[in-house]
Length: 188
Image 1 (cartoon, rainbow, N blue to C red):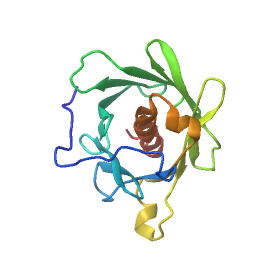
Image 2 (cartoon, one colour; image 1 turned 60 degrees about the vertical axis):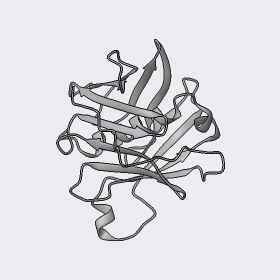
Image 3 (cartoon, rainbow, N blue to C red; image 1 turned 45 degrees about the vertical axis):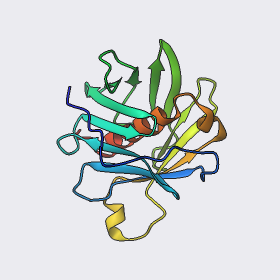
Image 4 (spheres, rainbow, N blue to C red; image 1 turned 90 degrees about the vertical axis):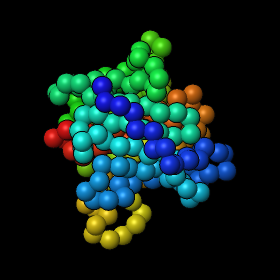
């Protein structure tokens, strides 16, 4: 497994109730492998896909550092570990990465959330609870104009009240971005 990227020069803000529930994941440079999640107050998380866009990524936010390792191709699994721990923290089982139709995130031998595509042409997907309560929705694109922004992998993230209170909220925000990038870049 590749080493953790801790973004040592960065301090990340903690998501607070006063924040607008709309966040954005952005790719600052069209050729870069670094991605940033921000609110109106500033940066909340950063992710780096090792060796460009590959099957390994590291994410850092105020609540910790995660490593994501994608294994397999047609029905890949994403193994999640936390900084300083050898044992997996969570596992994501993806039904079909290329159609992006469903994935289950398991922590502590229980399903923590379910990823589902909300429509093939809509460019959006979301995390829901096992009883279908919305948590986090990812909508492709950004609110910013300009041709260069359409060439980058970026999205708007809407956090529901249930999503805000979810015990694995920061992990859902980060691993949802891994899935979004995986679906946007099938060569990974």
